[in-house]
Image 1: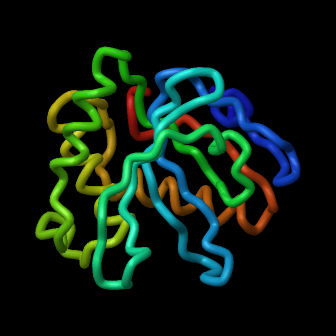
Image 2 (image 1 turned 60 degrees about the vertical axis):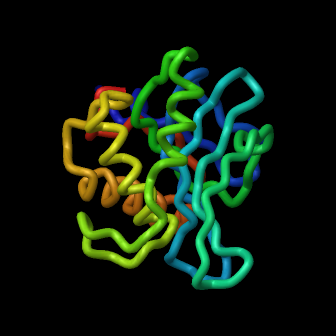
Length: 172
C-alpha cells in the first residue's frame, strides 16, 4: 500500500479531516507553548459528525490526573490536531463496554512501562489492555505504536499539516 493510500492529509487551514465511522484513533494534539510535546487521547468516531474523546487531564493541578470522556463534534475541525493514527474499528455494540473498560484503566504511575502517569502513559496502558482483551489487534508493541504516533506528529508539526493515518502496527 502506498503512502498516499495509507494517509489522508490536509493543510492546517483545511476545515475538516475525514474520519471513518466506528474507527478508533490515537490523537496527538499540539500543545503550542511546549513545542515538541503533545496531548495524547483516544478518539472513537461514531457518526459522520460526532465522536467521543477519551483522555487524562491534569487541569485542576499538575499533579492530579482525571479521566474524561467527552462527546465531541469538533475533532474533525480541530486545528491543534496533528495526527490521528487509526488503530482499530469498534462495532457499535462495543462502544459502551469500551468506555467502561477505559474507566477501569488505573490512573497511577505505570509499572509496565516504568513511567510516571501522564496522558501518554495512560494511553499506553489503555492500548495494552484493549489489545489484551480483543477490542483492538496490535501487530507491534505499544512502544512501537507510540513511536509511530510521535514521529508522525513531529513531522506534521514541522510541515504544518494534519494527517489521518492507518497504523502500521495494528489490524485496523
